[in-house]
Length: 252
Length: 119
Image 1 (cartoon, chains in turn yellow, orange):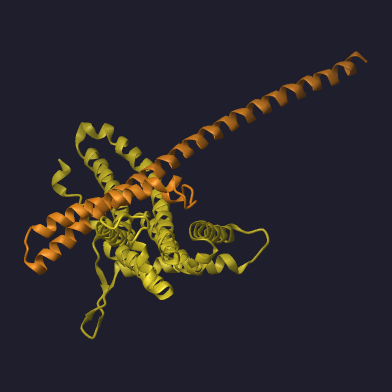
Image 2 (tube, rainbow over the protein chains, first blue to last red):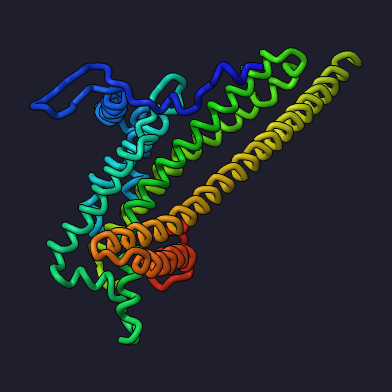
């Protein structure tokens, strides 16, 4: 059996340094993760700059894609936080495009999925929550704490409710980052395992007849993963908007 | 003369037949497209449902995990080994339910966000 040859589904997530860089004793290696972050940024920059360079009345393919991305995020931000929230549009748009392109580029075989690293997704989530806290405190001062005190609660219950609200607030960056990370990790592991099934069945004599079954499964799963890649970017963007809305209007 | 009379009739018939064949082909194509549209729609619905389910799960688990971590840390600071872990675990579970309730309640909520939050 081919089980001994160990098709390792975790191997694709290993971060390996491509160039050893140390700045004053700090580990600043240029890894494959860094490489793919640069690729993602270049792809987004290419889409937005080349796509909007023409400014033709009847958009070409690239221009249509760039305009669609802009309008989609803009309508999401407006619909969730109102026109007031549009000052956060650059943040939400950058987050959405980065997550979307990381997810999509990661689906290409032999690439590295940046968003399958919990460090990356947690950094993004921490950025969102820190923005919410800093902007909320700067704009509303102590009134921002009304976020944790719902109105119309009896004084006897208030300490418990506040504690629950605080835990709920602290759990936001965790659920935001873990959801994206786990979706990407699970999807890529599933694809890898199905691919391993095909290889193992082909190498096991008579059972090779049913090898096309997992192959068909991979095709269906890849389509599903494309959908998940987009949906997770969308969920990340819309939850960012929901949390930013709390910073704009605390106390519900 | 008879020959010339017959010709336009033939052409009309041929035209009629061709038109019918064309509209039949169009109908078939439309049906095919409807079929793929239906599967695409179903696929999208499944994707949305899966992502909503995943959202509910992660919000719920995150609440419990945060409660447990807080309780564990308080115990480590205050030296009251299991008490805060147990209490905060209960509050964390409550917070997890509260998170889930907020997702579920938003579509009919008074804030007028419609079903956007549920996606």
